[in-house]
Amino acid sequence: MNGTLDKARVLAKEIAEGLSASKGHSETVVCPPFVYLAAVAEAIRGTRLRLGAQNASEREAGAFTGEIGVEMLADFYCRYALVGHSERRAHYAESDAMVAAKFQRLLGTGVTPILCVGETLKEREAGETEAVVARQLDVVMERVDGANLNKGVVAYEPVWAIGTGRTASPEQANEVHAFIRKRVSEHNSEAAAGMRILYGGSVKSSNCEAIFQMPDIDGGLIGGASLKADEFLEICQAAG
Image 1 (cartoon, one colour):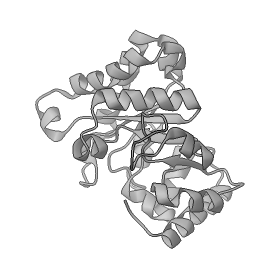
Image 2 (tube, rainbow, N blue to C red):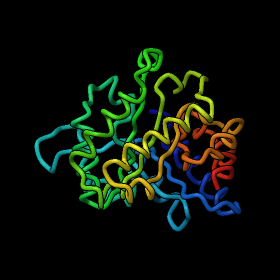
Image 3 (cartoon, rainbow, N blue to C red):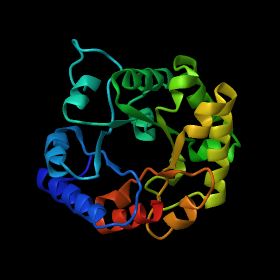
């Protein structure tokens, strides 16, 4: 929940222009607040930058005041939407079941869900990282058949490393990514091989290269560093 209309337009335009001048080939998506989707869609029209949303409702159209339906996102050419971000889980009581329903609903309408999973500091210190991530994944895999599973994206975001300046080491992050791929493989090996798994935990230009070199890390879910075009473009270049 950052920025103003003018800042959103300028930031999106700067990122789009920077990508057009870049030799990198990474797929790049920006997810502005809902009220700026139209402005950002216009600012990036005709560029290689793609549009996503920060959330989506699991419901169909109806009496759900304040919610944003998936079909509404598609009207603004959104190709992606985040589901289950740690802040949604923590501050708005989004359950694993609700997140799984959102993932399934997005797949059914052609918008790619980016499923966020991850553990808190308390859970990590208790040795519960794999159990927490497995629980969050399993609920989704129970609802989505293997053939469609890798049409979505998974983002591992250790909650203790978001906005704190702390980050998992590349090796620590890759361990969890490898676990995620293995867990998905137990459900469907083909889906696991093709699934993109992103890392999101205080990724910035100074640490992204080492993170992206890890074998099971396919890209980043960037938070604070995405609010500065130059910083974000450096990360995109490293990913490409």
